[in-house]
Image (cartoon, rainbow, N blue to C red; front, top):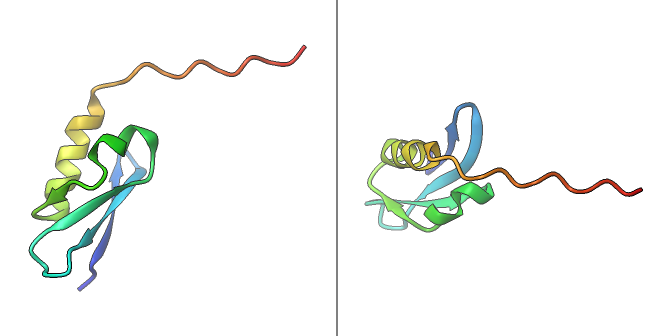
Length: 71
């Protein structure tokens, strides 16, 4: 059985969860900026992490403006 699971939302990897040493929980590690608020959070299962991230990332944050082009 694997101890690390990639968490994907809408086909995009947003982070991973790794089973803690005693095997009772999984810690989330963010891979994208929008997932950083969840970084380090503990979950009972990878599915619980995926559902929390799915709901949490559904709230759209304003897009970053495109960088200005050099003249």
